[in-house]
Image 1 (tube, rainbow, N blue to C red):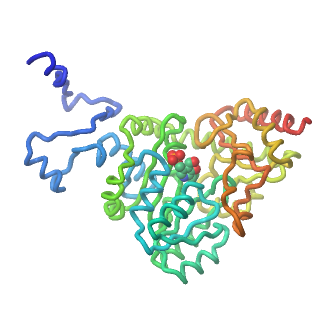
Image 2 (spheres, protein in one colour; image 1 turned 180 degrees about the vertical axis):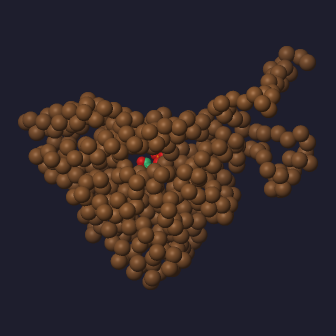
Image 3 (spheres, protein in one colour; image 1 turned 90 degrees about the vertical axis):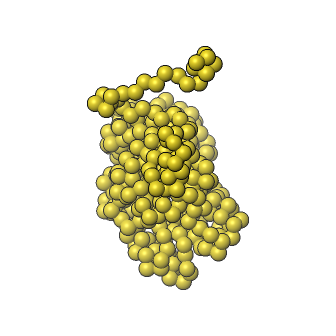
Length: 391
Ligand SMILES: Cc1ncc(COP(=O)(O)O)c(C=O)c1O
């Protein structure tokens, strides 16, 4: 063999069946091969399982898909390259022209954009309500044949709690499918409700370390099978190396959740007692309007704490700029704490009667709580609140 051939056919290193790596290797291979074309064709016809091309299936991704499906309490999962890709692919795979989608003013901005702009261009209609309006939800679903109800709980950024039992009951009666973006609550929550599809941004608590993006669509096998061809042909594939990093992040998922939620509860209590804070949005507080619902629906209250400063944009800027341990940053779910001051919080594109339902005002701040020592975080918040009102 000439050397130029050799470098393209390097020596194989095969492990004996009784000598396995403890951590599964990264299958950083786009292509997989069978020994002959007959077996390849059998695979392509769906007669034989296996892997052929990584846009449609890859063993590293499959391991993560099986893990996430099991954690969420469903049969199957499709991974995507980001959380919004999971939302977009779900919407595109489940809707056709003439369908009607019910969505909410409190939903994540890009999800609203996808329904109101992208799906609208393809002839999908929608109604937008507040997640606080279960009677309105029931009425719309009774009056109008609806394909999807797309919602979140807790909502971003003010942590409203959706009444999942009421929403799923109304949807089931009318034949609509429910899609819950479960990113804020996590895989360990909401699995017991009869929801049809869960979507997650893996960029947040799954990866946990702010160094990789990913998304997941989780549902029963039948529904995932119906979506698979559309989703894989749209092509939002997750890279195997990213899947490996997310899988590694998942090893500490429960430890991080436990610490982050405990820190969040302590911080919410501190803020609620602070004279410069008008209102705290955290479902773990008894004063939160969704507290009882959250207790019923969730095993914890999440790690996002929002609050309204007594001041406005200027105080919010001074507060965020003075913080030492909270970085001004998008996203949530990292091990380090993050802050979004009022100047940077979205939601302003919701206009008209539903604007008030977002509860976002010029003093609203969002905190994503990390795993640092909570006494350091509280001391940092205390000095930053002093700095915000020092002039
Ligand atoms: C609730 C929710 N869903 C989806 C996404 C999108 O995830 P990604 O940034 O991984 O695309 C986000 C991101 O902030 C989010 O907060």
